[in-house]
Length: 241
Image (cartoon, rainbow, N blue to C red; front, side, top):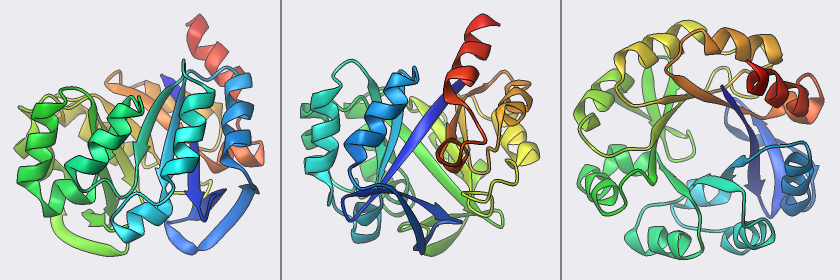
């Protein structure tokens, strides 16, 4: 189990949201670079970065901030999402040595683009599934679709996808525990590794998620920033297992 600290960027600041509500943002760092430095000092080898403005606008908005993090910490793996809807954007980030790119809305609204992206950049693309009441949401979680997660996974199962991030929007930022049942069900169904997201409160939540061996990691946000989960303790716990 890999605990992955989240850095969500809105208006150039590191924030956390509740259930994807862009108006609920709480600022934790004025400079996201300081957040990255803090979690790296705690021992993380990977960061989960989301350009919230980019996700809403459909283009890269916080490119300079993200590039600054990349250039400052060249040895850290970065998985990045938010507003990645064109090959120009993908290539810009790949050229800036971003390790993995998360495509969510594009995987729903432009399936040919998503398939081509996975083919051009094998195992560099992560499929982001943001689910609300059983259906996938897009455009920074502001739009709902009529597509279920399992159907999309099945459609894309033969592609060279790095992993799938499964987020239960109703759990995200609420500190009331992950959606264990649906996350584990999806992990058992999928031939692609799953990264859990949404609701992680503490080390016990991570331990419970790890019971399903196909859950590769878990994105940790508010629990880390509020101090209910100690990142160093979590990393050491799973390292020693």
